[in-house]
Length: 104
Figure 1 (cartoon, rainbow, N blue to C red):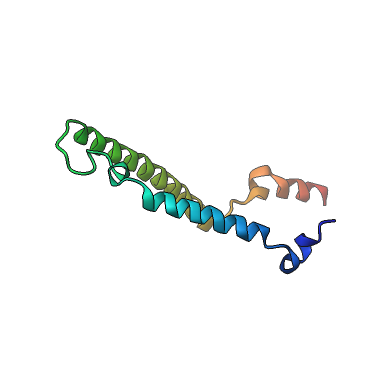
Figure 2: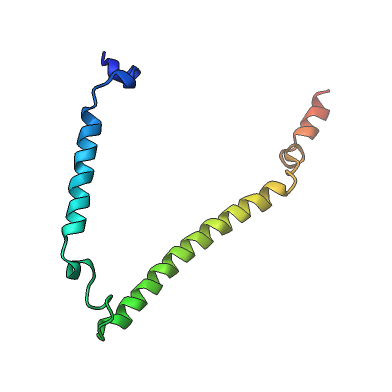
């Protein structure tokens, strides 16, 4: 069995070295990236015909998310309301009390 699973303090520092090296590579790549690559022309404020379409797409996506959240909230409200209602008398509905009277 692999003892590092049960005793992580005894494991070698190889995974922490790999994580530190990966973080250093990513940080240096972000710092050395040219600034024009960080945003497109529409986001930087240039006048374009694309801007209204992007705004509309954002609002459509927000509408989808809002409708999904409203549906989940409505279902939770329905379950909570149904849980507060009294349970029906299944014995009366199924006629079990009448059968018990006939048997005794």
